[in-house]
Image 1 (tube, rainbow, N blue to C red):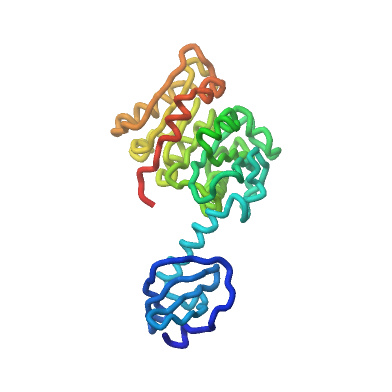
Image 2 (cartoon, rainbow, N blue to C red):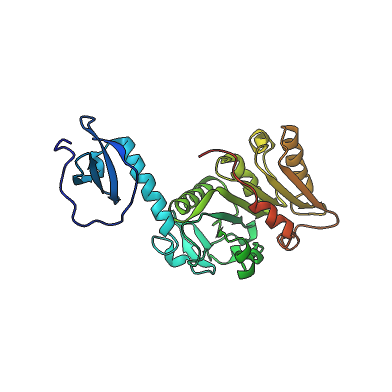
Length: 312
């Protein structure tokens, strides 16, 4: 091992790991060796070189891109393992809804439980509210949400991380900068909490129903399934949406969002070859259907059984 890699002998370090030997290469490609990874941080690694068993501290930046990617992957899993009790979201993990503001300035409420096993990975459910709940009070967006799924009894059966963002303006809706800010929040949650990336779900009503169609159509690689209520979308996205499990709900007497908006999307997706879509239409029912839909045990069971079909 050349001096470009051998910086110092380790005495103490943060974190530890027992791993099988692997090949390591310097950033300039001039040095390569076999060694056991003993410990690692965001800036350094501790490696026991083979076959002489010398232990060295190496700055992460002095290793190859492939080695840095490997360490960063281990760091990510550690952050996720410890995320319920340590890290940027730990204080928000109380078992109850907690108000917060994302790095991008998006208001949201979040619920997770520090009693969960951080080594496991849990679903993430995002609720998108309707236009009347837009604003900046970080409170109104909870109205109409599937809060009955957040009870201790429900969480004991299927624990999941829940977020309810608040759209600042109904004129913008769940698109443009608001959508970008929400996706940035989701990405950060995935990095810092034990979220199962194959079980990320989106649901919303009215403007949130439109947002559910739109966001899943724009980011089909992110979401495992969607449940849009009394909303509509762009039928041009049908080719993308055909592969995403969706359960669509609408009342046929909706005087705010015509039921034809849902019917059009359902027909377009099915015409594109979609076989994962279900549609439930309530006869004689108007716009307010959250109180009918979210208490359904079959919906909750169906949703959490869905897995993302795309590989990471």
